[in-house]
Amino acid sequence: MNILLTGGAGYIGSHTAVVLTQANHEVVLLDNFYNSHKRVLGQLQKILGKNLHCVDGDVRNTTLITKILQDCKIDAVIHFAGLKAVGESVQNPIEYYANNVQGAISLLEAMKFANVKTLLFSSSATVYGDPQYLPIDENHPTGPTNPYGKSKLHIEEMLKDLTNSDNEWKIACLRYFNPVGAHESGLIGENPAGIPNNLLPYIAQVAGGMRSDLAVFGDDYPTIDGTGIRDYIHVMDLAEGHVKALEFLEVNNGWHALNLGTGRGYSVFEVIEAFEKASARKVPYHVVSRRLGDVSECYATPQKAKVVMSWSATRSLHEMCLSAWDFQRLNSVAAP
Ligand code: NAD
Ligand code: UFG
Image 1 (cartoon, protein in one colour):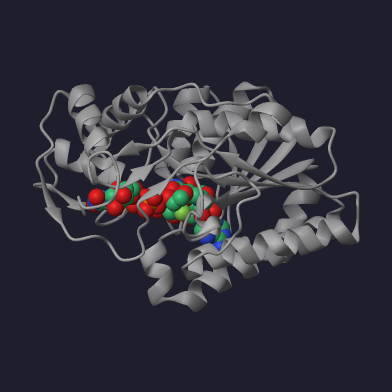
Image 2 (cartoon, rainbow, N blue to C red):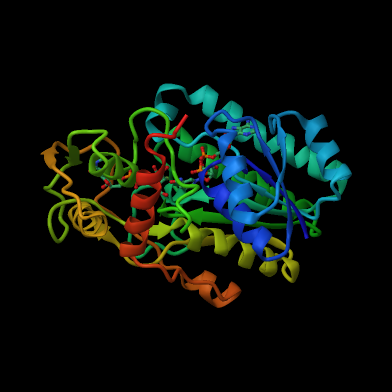
């Protein structure tokens, strides 16, 4: 298949590009490099032994997207492009709706015009809001608590309306839990600009000596050790989930929501311990008060993805930490 990856130079998009190319698909990347670096393209070339076609542009440029869909004879689109920082979305809601919601509308207009009706959408566990029960299945009520999560839910709802209006559309909303880790080569990985918001990249920078210690946001949650529990999933497992989801859509029309998680949660202290083991470095930390908006526990049941598309995550927390550490070691100096 010929597949367009919007936001394809980003963290999850670049790993998915590798897996799709190795599965003999032709990928075209579209990215405005707002939160990624052109250097990624060279790294992808090293991994794959060939250059990937990448267009430097904005997903909100409907004319450009239409042209790519037509010129490259695109069969399916994976829509990764968007802004993703929860805290920033609270400060700057309009920017989030403008990029995420407007970006999706622009893409859908282009897809409709070019008659490309197969789409995977990068959604998030954040659409569920505060868990009402665990593990979270796809029927769990939605109720995002921040503009980022609301923008994801608005898009999901738009996509549902679209499939209701025309049954030729095939759309899967992939609700990612907590993607971490990197490609085994150490050439691509998560490379956040500035101070990392998320746990794993922060820990990696502490282990690498770029930061002195980790602030653990609360040790008074009702969990095994008092720290927050999340469903961390290796980015390569997640990438492979996209290949499976495309196969699923080949034989299934309509709108589908699918959790991509492991089904197992780990606490912050467990992640610190696993990272120390994988890196053979100390990760100094101190406990501070809870971060506003954080929930105590969040993990998926990935049962639906297993049943309907024969996918489940296989990589361990140790492998997640090991690969994140390799990427950190190899890239902390070279990062642009
Ligand atoms: P990322 O920031 O690394 O990748 C997103 C890419 O989209 C970046 O390369 C950015 O430059 C590009 N982009 C942003 N706006 C664009 C626009 N208007 N036009 C063209 N390109 C644009 O993020 P990621 O972690 O790879 O996330 C990919 C998707 O998955 C996002 O939609 C995100 O919301 C979603 N998601 C991520 C996580 C996570 O923890 N990483 C969890 C759940 C869902
Ligand atoms: N944490 C710390 N210190 C830090 C960073 C995080 O203790 O410096 C803790 C948090 O309190 C939480 C856990 O580590 O208990 C994980 O936090 P992350 O920020 O890594 O992940 P979140 O679960 O808060 O959110 C992430 C993404 C969201 C996405 C969500 C579900 O940031 O965009 O996963 O997919 F919606």
